[in-house]
Length: 54
Image 1 (tube, rainbow, N blue to C red):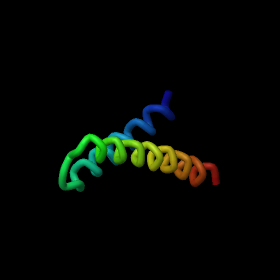
Image 2: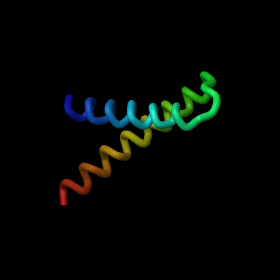
Image 3: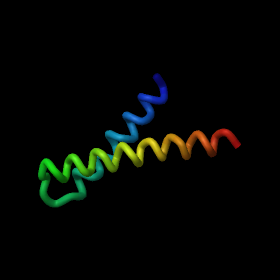
């Protein structure tokens, strides 16, 4: 459950940053940003776990 919460927090923060930085909020832009933010959130979690394991 903690893993899901961590990814959700990363995803929402990254999606929020994306929405602030784009000039026009178009549905396709939101979809692309949300998918990219999900990928980045999963990589951020994996990176944090890799660093913490050392």
